[in-house]
Length: 419
Image 1: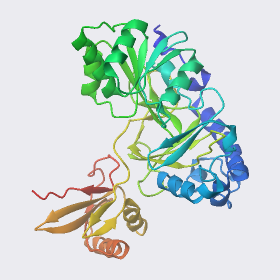
Image 2: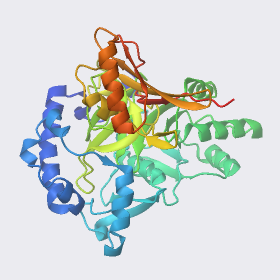
Image 3: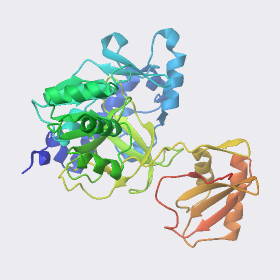
Image 4: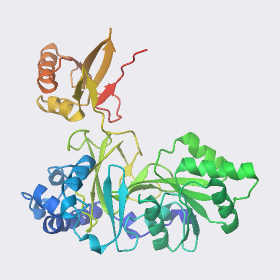
């Protein structure tokens, strides 16, 4: 059996019901930890009893935390010398590193091995103890380089801290040191492989890669494969660490064992039916930075069934776009939360999508909604009135049979063209 069908630990193959129970046992402690030690969460969760959050329906009632809120919280508390907006459960002096991401957002790294949990993804990509890894993720201010390096060290691998740029020097280093594989973005991996071919430098010992940070379309994956490198991808963020990772079978991304993943309707905190696309919301069981119901801003969907690789956690389809679909119509902003509010005021409605077009130089809105039985003039008129009340603009309503709209997570689709 290939070593790629081995597992990082027994957590990956445990019974899904036991995993769910363990997650919510840990979440009870996490909420208590957040309320006791993270002032920002103490305020937002002040009416929540930790022991009451025992399942997903209870979790779905907790408030969503968005990246924009992190920025605002951090700005408000700078004068109190808390760069994390009261959301960490440890003092800044107890941290190993403090990173700065665009926004700015300040991200903590605690003093413990594999804080970001990337060793699991590296193992699934085929890396093993004693390997050398060429790490081309950035090390400057942002945490990507450190995230992969700490995971590699936890796995027992040596790291070439290459960072970004210096393409020719990186190629020559790979040729001299002969790392087993690469970590970095897929586009930069292709650049390195092409530069090696251009210079006539042999870097064939580098046969595998774990990539992240950008999309990996099939065409790019195939280009890299044709140049001799087997590539796997993972989904991670500076706020949460590892979210999901690809296994040897390459069918979706398996969720990490130390988070709880929900898929919600964009602009809301409401979970979608299993298999429907929506925004990825993650609750981390990280005790130092207890982000609870953190909205990533990314669209994805849960794949039905279990992975053929034997891992039993849920699988995500991968990145399907951004959840923030706010747009301007007639000079006024319309956002997904407003569309969701319109739908909530009426019963027995399914998937929906607000289509924004420009006809004869005028912006128009058409709210398309699935419902059993299809169109109903009286109901459509009532929903149109609600749309105007919520958005302050008139729009048409089309009621459609179930299964008409695509399952891609879009709530607002702007199809305007000014050609």
